[in-house]
Image 1 (cartoon, rainbow, N blue to C red):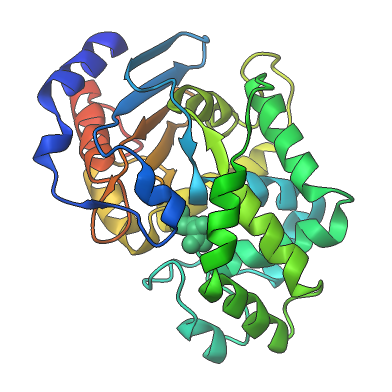
Image 2: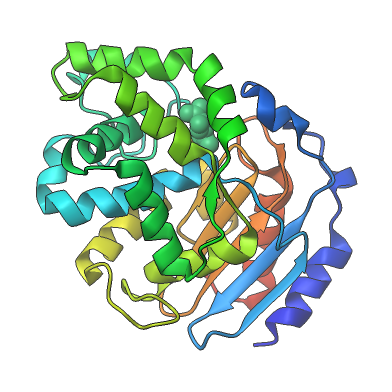
Length: 304
Ligand code: GLU
């Protein structure tokens, strides 16, 4: 497969001028990002990789970080994790509080904010220094020690994070949060502020394409069963309340974030990351989704 030719075609065909959405602004720091940015990177199992545009520029990965924290929590809790978080699509916006009341504080899945905050609670409870360990995890799977948090994004999110703080308080009142509220939201705001490029994200996500093995070293960091569960959740819950549309258009498991990044994988084959900060109404990168639709159309390969 000539991936570079396919990426060049996508880059020629598409422009930020063709999409009408807006850059996220509810976290003030994110509103400063240049809407013209556009990059894409593909990693294959044989370590070959291909790219275009701003694929080496770091951006705020936001909710994509929820896949890393889920992987860490599954390593600690195994199948007991599912007593605390469910595995169904929510069909509601990512920051919604409504389902929690009648579902007794058990979030629908680990990728909506409610679920990710329960995962934060687990990591804050179980790890001495969760911020450090998350950074170590991401640096290890990419072999890249330049990856770090973006303090200004974390602070900006903290200053405006009323819904997330409300979610933790609410879940705590319903009995599914163990630790104090402050360290949980602090960790959550930092995980969302992780700054990574498409190159780094696509490399990191090779662990999910590669049955839990780190691309460079071949070291097995996750069990195949864990990877199977995470990929299933990405397929059904990875795109806010647009997971059905993403499956329909693109046909790969993946995860998006409001920074405009999307990462998707094809098991045993490749990992692909795309970044364009212009979001559609559901909060997914508009150009990113279109680019991935073209990618699976031009390669003729998807999980379906
Ligand atoms: N930090 C964001 C929030 O909790 C994550 C948003 C996202 O990318 O879905 O509002």
